[in-house]
Length: 75
Image (cartoon, rainbow, N blue to C red; front, top):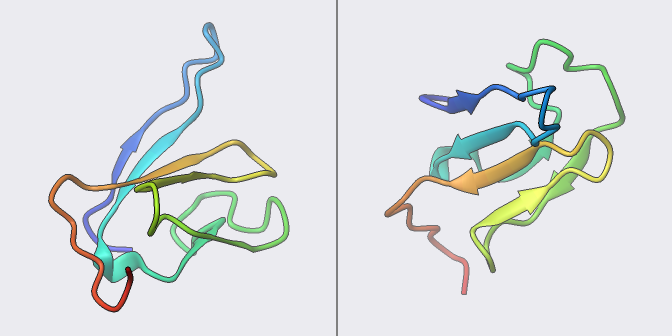
């Protein structure tokens, strides 16, 4: 992944980790190769095309499209 913005998890409030992604990160899967715990759980592909975000069912990480991101070939 290139130029991702990682917002760390706050364990006091138990908010999810949020990762901003761009069109170059599609197809998206969690965990990503750049994730420190890349082998933490099975790879799952996530669809962000419809809503602009997706949550991993295993670890709860939320992936959001960067503002203004256009996905080509998706309707």
